View 1 (cartoon, rainbow, N blue to C red):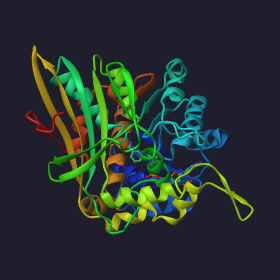
View 2 (view 1 turned 180 degrees about the vertical axis):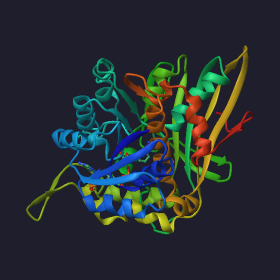
View 3 (view 1 turned 120 degrees about the vertical axis):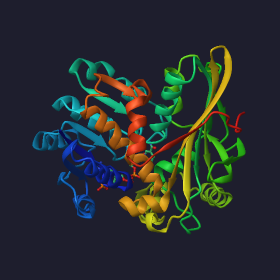
View 4 (view 1 turned 90 degrees about the vertical axis):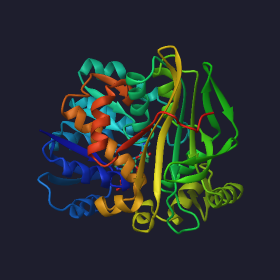
Length: 399
Ligand code: NDP
């Protein structure tokens, strides 16, 4: 049916590649590209038994012209951007220049400002619409599936949604005293920032990790969860009409928080460049270099993730609550595709979003967040592609 150019060769890209190759009737050809082609070749070599033709290429996606040249050579129907958020705009520019659809899993962030905002990518709406091209933003798990869950609840179960709590729990244990599950730079930038949630039409700010609760989640057990700002809050606050409050919570163990506090106190999480032995370095980037590579955690990580949405609102004049979630087992993911559940829960939805665009089910000229598409085909695919979901119509975790 089509060809996909996959940019990035990290943990998430590895999953996207394996999942595309399990859906060869849709992804007839793929090209994996990043700055270091050897990483792309290693992913290619790890795929066994597929009808999908796989190529690799070297590209620096910070350079629009390099992406344009690669797109002209490979001629894909869609670009799946699973590099880093810094490359979103250069890749979107290349897609516009060459007339190709676009999908990513994280919103653009300027390298020098740790600020998650959609404004830069939403500014491309008219350009994509006029070009007849589709751009799907944030098709990972969160953002991604959490937006699809919200849209599905709205479509099938509620007349009005008033409250959404997104709860992202990871009970995986990799055996290291401290390591981050995905790109450490992005992860640490996310949790050392102030917390923020949307209530009664405005944003309420908290100190970093100020709001803490203990939630007893299905198949995970009681865990400390902390309120964070997360990028899907921005789009969901706009796209779920009549929403009164939306918050995002993530689990962190006490051990993790202790390490993080120390690293922060000694200045290791700073993105302000410093001079070291005559060379300018960014402490956070240096920290990333000494921490375990997230891709190496796969074989060591045991346990499960549980990510879902707890939703409250009104149906037929009556108050209603609904909890929809996915449980994912780190070791099962590793056995299947050679990556742990954090990469798996991001890579599978990225493949599904791209599949729906190629099949025409999510083809809609413009720039859209996932909750702006029909959630039904995506929910169906989640069940088929390894991320089955469960529903609870009497959730106890209400607040
Ligand atoms: P990794 O750091 O493991 O991989 C990133 C990849 O991007 C590397 O392979 C790197 O390869 C490539 N890359 C970096 N810069 C460039 C560039 N200039 N040009 C081309 N390739 C580049 O990250 P992950 O795989 O863990 O995450 C990928 C994306 O997924 C990130 O944007 C992350 O924020 C997002 N994510 C989204 C989640 C969600 O639920 N929505 C959850 C987790 C992650 P090389 O060095 O060879 O260029």
